[in-house]
Length: 81
Image (cartoon, rainbow, N blue to C red; front, side, top):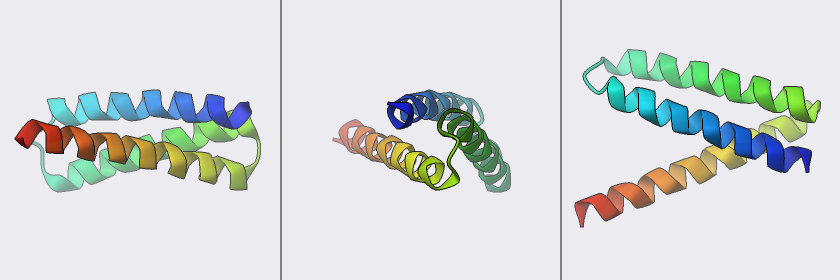
């Protein structure tokens, strides 16, 4: 149940990343990469606070990032069709 909770909270963080990325659409790529790094750090920190296991935290973070990335790709495909 802890992993599920961590993934849900991380998905909320990734949604916040989407909003901030949308608001900064005219920024340079380096700033977007740095912003992604900050949100990745936040996601790992939140996951580690809840799960308290580094290996399970990384698993949960990669799962939430995969879900987020899949959703973004699906939405991009639906937008251009």
